[in-house]
Every structure is written in C-alpha cells, then in structure tokens.
Image (cartoon, rainbow, N blue to C red):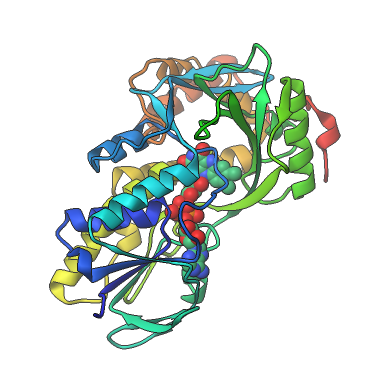
Length: 405
Ligand SMILES: Cc1cc2nc3c(=O)[nH]c(=O)nc-3n(C[C@H](O)[C@H](O)[C@H](O)COP(=O)(O)OP(=O)(O)OC[C@H]3O[C@@H](n4cnc5c(N)ncnc54)[C@H](O)[C@@H]3O)c2cc1C
C-alpha cells in the first residue's frame, strides 16, 4: 500500500508530528516513520524538558515513565546566581527511554515504523517525492524531515540552514554540597572564559540507577575545539567533586532556529531540530512539540486542498507563540554569544526587573518574549540613572586557561 506521508526520524519531532497528524484527523495508514536506528536508541542529551514542554506532552495525553522532576532552573556565573522558577515543574528523562515511549505510543496508534532504514537522498517529482533509502527508492506525496541537527533531508533539498553549535556531555556520580538534584544548573562562566555558551549540571534518571548527573558544555557558535570543551567539562566535574561514570565525554552538534532558516519546499516540511531549536540554551525537546503542533495543522490543510504546497510555512510559524519566542531566543543568543557577551552578562546578573520576573513563578522559560518591552524599559531607566551603558569590557576570566584563540 502506498503511504502518503513519510516522516524521516523517530525522535521527539517525528513522534510528536505523527501524534499531531493523528489528532487533526490524518489516518494512521497514511503515514510511515523511517529511522536509521533501532529503538530504544541512545541520544546524547541532558533530557530536560522545561514547563511548556511538559504541558505539551500532557496535552498529547502522555506522561512518560522513569523520569524525575526538578523545581527550578538556576542561571549562575561568577557574577551571581538567579533562580528561575517556572509556573510548574520541569521533567528530566533518559532520552533513549523517553523517545522509545513516545514512539511506542505512535506505533500503538497504528502508524508503521521502519527501523534500520537510512535516507540517503531525495528525488523531487511533479506529484511525489522519491526517498532514496538503504532499502531502495520509494515515493511519497509528502516528506517530513524530522531527522535532527544534521538533517539529510534539509541538505538534500537545498534548504538554507542555521547556526550550528557543538556540545559535549558525560555521566557523573557524586558531587559536592553545592549540587542540588532538584535544580537544573546553567553556568555561564564559559562565556567569560571565551566559550560562547554555558555549562550544565542536570540530574540524570538513568533507568535502573540512581545518584547520577549529566555535565556538559554548549558552544552555541561551534567555534571552540571539541578538545577544549571536553577539558572544560572534566575540570567542571572536578571542581564540584564528581567522578566520571561514562567511558568518554562525547560530542554532538546542535542546529539553531533563526529568521533566515528555510523549512519548506514543494511536498516537503522540516520539523524539530531539522528546522531549528532554541539558540540561547539549546533546548530542543519542547520546541519539537510546538513545531509539530503547528506543522501538522498546516500539512492537514494542504492534504485537504489536494495541494503539495504550504505557503508561508516559516512566516506563519513566526506568528505563533513558540515562533515569536524562538526568534527572541535567537536574538538573545546573538547578544550573549556574539555582540557584547560581557555587557549582557553584567546586565543579566544585575537587573532587578529580570530577577523579579525569574523568581515570580509566573513565567515559563521559552515564553519570555513578552517581557522584552518591560526589560528594555528597565535597561534604559537604569542606564539613564547611571549615565552610562553597562560596560562591554572583558570581565576577569574565572578559568583563564581555556583561552583558545
Ligand atoms: C549534548 C546535548 C544535550 C542536550 N540537552 C538537551 C536538554 O536537556 N533538553 C532539551 O530540550 N534539548 C537538549 N538537547 C537538544 C535535543 O537533544 C534535540 O534538540 C532533540 O533531540 C531534537 O529532536 P529531533 O526529534 O528533532 O531530532 P533527534 O532527536 O536527533 O532525532 C532524529 C532522528 O532521525 C534519525 N535520522 C537522522 N538522520 C537520518 C537518516 N539519514 N535516515 C534515517 N534516519 C535518520 C536519527 O536516528 C534520530 O532517531 C541537547 C542536545 C545535545 C547534543
């Protein structure tokens, strides 16, 4: 039987896209998910889902098992610390386990899953697109690229991509008294040390184990050699009294959302990280759910019209709440990682308005764009009062030995 829609990738983007398509009335028999992996498969990831993502999962009727909850994000650096309290808790998962549970839900709903199938290329046609796979060529009315950071579908279709970051991560046990398993720590000292990103310390609920953490570093511009990021992670672990459990500190790229990234062609849509994720913190799971909710509605409407085009796919998403916020995160990432990192870190850790918003418990990470006017006004008022713009001069590097350029 010929399926109408091929979803390439069975991660959170592919699974949520299938579930959202089902919820808008697409028949399970019209879809197939193809993935080169066999599930459960490992995925390098902190596994943290901020509050809006936990809400999205609940909306899909899914509360996955074997996770844990945290009650706070903490932004810290040698300049200070800000507890970021969301409207609800965050969830943390082992990604292999989370992705498997989501995909099982999709398969239970009747969607075909083909594992161990690698997509090698695309053959665009008039009324269908050919997928060149390790099992031969197959034609579909629609192809959905949910194939992650290095999306083959994006590259094969010539769509313009975004900025790529580089991340490293490993599993640890132990930790000193400053480590709280109920908090997701985002440490921005790497910015002061010349790395455009942050280091994280997250609890890790590996199924069948306890007392584990994941530590890693994000270079949000892909500029820093992986070796430097690994050394940074190992030293961060040592400073906090951790012992490494995983064999090595492994690396993986990220692909960030931005206003110029393209995500559609005739008969083809990108979702999840193939399109792009939060450029400031590299949060990808929650954006996957929100993008899929939007993409499924647009695809259903094209199917109903008998069309292979989704006009204004990117622009339409910019108008959604998630789209506006991903653009805001893109803007913040430019400020913190490129334009004047030391100025904006000074502002981040000294703004009373920002501290009030962060600790209020009324906001949600990834939903902060609406604060921009208030924070902007606070910045202007404080600048006028102090009669100078906060300095962009380099702050003292806490760990100067990481200077690499
Ligand atoms: C070190 C690290 C830590 C992170 N921590 C967090 C975090 O704590 N919280 C968070 O929200 N995000 C985090 N992220 C980002 C998050 O992991 C991703 O954004 C998220 O996995 C994107 O989901 P996806 O479904 O779009 O892609 P993926 O999860 O990458 O899934 C893509 C799927 O496509 C398949 N595939 C790829 N190419 C092909 C091909 N050619 N043929 C067939 N199949 C293919 C793959 O096998 C894979 O199963 C982290 C990323 C990294 C690297």
